Amino acid sequence: MLLLVSCAQGPDIWVPREVDFTPPRLVSCERDTSQSVVLSFDKPVDQLVVEPPKGEVSFTTTDQRVFLLSLSVQPEPGAEWVLRVHAADPLGNSSVFLVAIYGTNPRLPRVRLNELNIQGSTTKPDYIELLVQSDGNLAGLVVAMGAPAQGEAFYTFPSVEVKTGDYLILHTKPQGIAQEKDETKHKRESGGLLSSPTAWDFWWRGGKGLSGTTGMVVLLDNPRGKALDAVIYTNRTSTSDDRYGGWGSKAMKDKAYWLHTLKIWEASGEETLVPEDAVHSGYVTSTRTLNRKNTGLGKNAWFTGATGTASPGSVNTTQVHVP
Image (cartoon, rainbow, N blue to C red; front, top):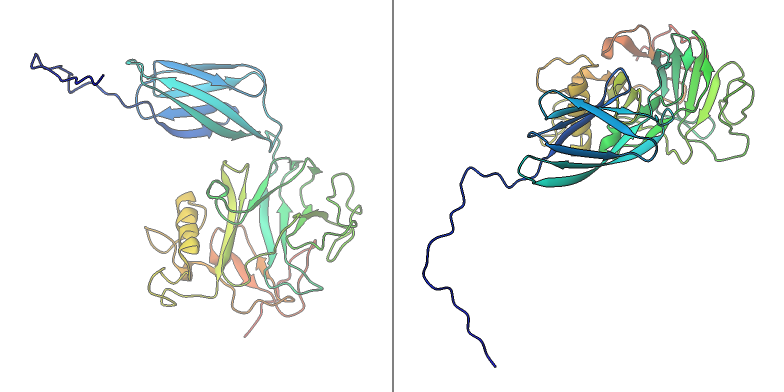
């Protein structure tokens, strides 16, 4: 039997045009100084349910758009947690989000980038040296090659008590041998190329080293947290190519834009960084490293050391390479 169904003429179905059928959209997820989680939505949220891996969540809000979440249990510093967030507006439009947060460290010391070996050799592999400027614990401190949220590689330091004046060496291209041990208790626990008996040695497992001519290193308090320090370097200029502002690739141009938004590196323009804003890397070799000479946040705070003056784990040279 074949049934033919048609719609007979009748009154139109009226739907008010001002009715909003779009669900709430999560605009941002941030941490504040009290270790709370701040969720911001693009519209008022009438119902909010947040499910953490452990413990319970309470929250407060003033305008139904920004919610301050308090966690009864905090993730360990540097540890990743995924929160399941269900949000609904007053009309019942709802959406579900999975939000990643990281444990924060209230005792994180002040640390600065101090020396980079970007042109390592077989016997003198790449490393990043950092200088500790206040007492504290390293747990959760992050060194990244760009924005971790955009998929850039990053390293998270383990829990280690450090003192003002300590040096940290992050070996970014390890051999993968048993002697390469992260030093968490004593500075003489590790072997391996360029390990130091007077510095804390750490090994980036599976690390491929640093970019040899154009790249950046950023220090953050957690993978999605606040940027604390940075350095960007290149041997290129604004006229090196036409498409990417001289940076050589879209990926590097995007990194420069991201670093500009962090406002922790001096720029000559208002829109983004240009290659001339970076530390010049054209004279670096395995025995000529990039050295920090002061606490400034720009290319003038760095220089290429003279040949043979690489100093992982100790005071930087003051001898400048003269081409």
